[in-house]
Image (cartoon, rainbow, N blue to C red; front, side, top):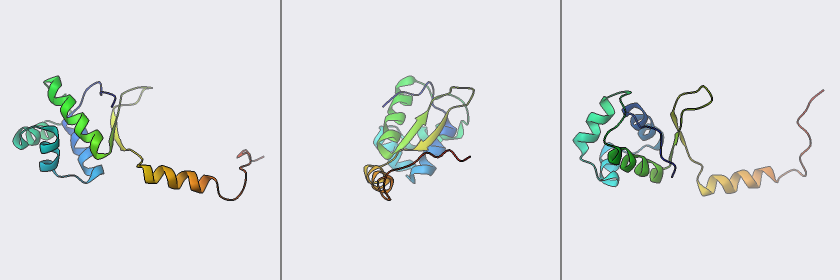
Length: 107
């Protein structure tokens, strides 16, 4: 997993919402006390410290299927879902249906 430049409580809450995981499940997987995790989520945009906690939470979120997006190109940091292997297989199957693809350019 690529480490985020920083992790905030809002990012944790967003990742939990996207992956439909409970606070308790994340706390267990990250090895962090549930009350500490609850406080971190409530801290809003404050970066998670110490770095070891941020890394543990980021790694746990990665295992649950959340992708932490770094700040860049004038956009802020965020969270999105990773594609599962099944998703990738289905996309590949759909892209191969209907013969060769033609240019998408429309005059």
